Image (cartoon, rainbow, N blue to C red; front, side, top):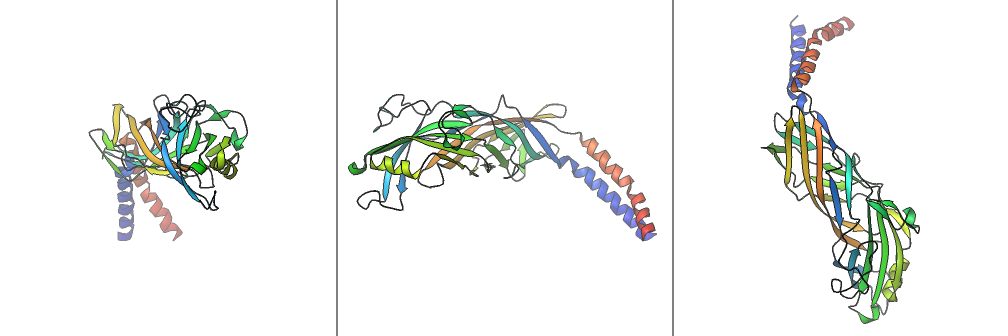
Length: 318
């Protein structure tokens, strides 16, 4: 009899414990695509390229200037010394996209905590195509819908013998993002989202197709990076934007805002010759309806009420 009472009390305690913690169960937030977007920016930069074989006269390492411009631009002018052409103001078109999908979290409005659960492999944040860009999937000539598009210019004037240029069209497609974190406190509706892990998923594609390759350097790059596509792969970064908010909008409805500022590196292809520094900025806005705590409590109490039945069945089988 004593053992039976202990078993019943243990089950009852387990049910009540479930009732007390059920509000921390995963909550799915729906991303508001009309208010959410991310922007990929590749700033002007200088990179060093190292070749496994000499380019000329024993030279295997050289420094180049890199510019990422509008897909319809040509490298140019006072903003880009060493380049010739028009429309040199930089990449300001076709690099911002809306996003949709869902955010998986553990969210406890009572305790004031939230934890992002979109770990790599479960990323459900989907980038919406922002336009049609060259090249097509596989590096084929022509335009096709994509998340991002740009034209990359590489120029070298530091070594006269290598004075060259190279340009290629780049399109990035089928990008899925993820957000993950530990348990974050919410204080007065504010949550510090700096430190939240941000990444892309396997399966996203970066397509490239050279437009021209002048001089020794240009010819080398054109040969090393033929038209094609590769898996962009997981690009991981840590969010540096801290101003997140979780706001109750009435009843059990909540609105979540996560500012995004992520430094990443983007490889043009598998050769490793061209790796660009870039940033992803933007804002993710999502909403959710959180079940009443009483609902979870009733579930826990109901399970506790069934405990004696479970004990009796167990003893009969024994």
